[in-house]
Length: 63
Picture 1 (cartoon, rainbow, N blue to C red):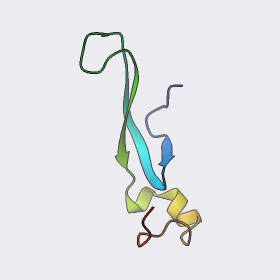
Picture 2 (cartoon, one colour):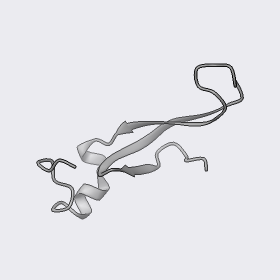
Picture 3 (cartoon, rainbow, N blue to C red):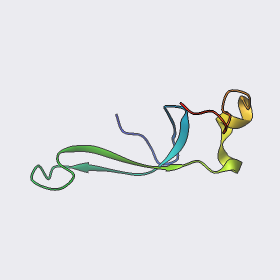
């Protein structure tokens, strides 16, 4: 499944945005075959999930 740039991703309680994706056919290379999705943490201004549920996404909780 390809995720377009800008898609939000929730992973173990952390929020990210897709910044790039590459499909590799380089089965002998560092990144091997397949789809590679590159993420960066969301900024406070862009953290829609945090704004929707601030009591759920608290910074003081450890998973």
